[in-house]
Length: 401
Ligand code: SF4
Ligand code: SF4
Image (tube, rainbow, N blue to C red; front, side, top):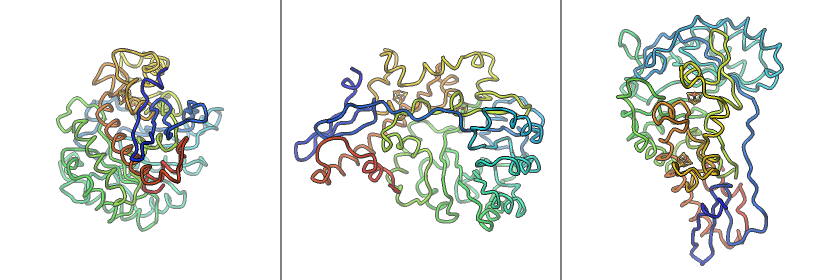
């Protein structure tokens, strides 16, 4: 049985054994009194992404729109779109809408129509340069969540974020950010991992956290582009995430890429897919077409791959099939990894799993589980035998637990 093959054992100081099953994402001490159950996160449709425009006032060096010469469409007509979506049964299930571009705030009049006609949560991913005081007021009133791109606290940290004439966007980003702060708009800072910040990310994030108090900070690997000379390696990024995990108490904001990878451990659940493009999320492009992912579905080869193909490529399925070409069955991150971005997997590795994950998630989990072992050693008298409670695991692995 797969669970037995992959079972991890940690000897405690008093001779007890802490077991971890990466197949079920469950921990227990010595003996199990109950059968383990596979608990998957739900994959029902709840989220919509709208790529409202591919136009942008900026020209960031790692941008996937410019980097991959993505086909341009006109800006989306939100009135037409929202009115037609209201006729669709599936739209009634949508709880969040993320607006993304290009630069969505080029179409703020269209966004206002959405804010007035959709009751769920609206999130806007923006370079921040176009935010005005009026926009911030409207966003605050409607409780919008803004994801603002900022690669570090200082101007020189943001040298990849430039306008077409080569000038830095930084001063305009900070002006926009200050409007968000003045109006108490909920926001997160989104930082792209680059050679500029990957070796001092704890210091950079701590400063941004202290200066601006964002709710969340994202620290993402850029997607594949033709020119990848700016990229950090998976190993550099993986080490940066470990540093962030080890210093998580110094940063108040939730660090999203840590949470995605560690939450399955404290929930005791299985993350089947990292990307929900063919499950809980739909994407609408500015020509009103509905796709799974604009990058995949516009590719002449990848666009023909079926949902079944993507279902069968996830680590849990590969492991269950005992596929000899992959290490998922033996991996500590089996139920936490989700396989990374399928587009990056297809472009970089010829299959829908982004194998950079194999250098990122397992090493992070090893460090986190080492912390759990130390905590269990300390608390073993109270914990006793049997399954570890999910709340206990959360308390050890998550600063807010
Ligand atoms: S990290 Fe790699 S080996 Fe481990 S489950 Fe994910 S894809 Fe498979
Ligand atoms: S496949 Fe990758 S690029 Fe496409 S939606 Fe998913 S995470 Fe984004």
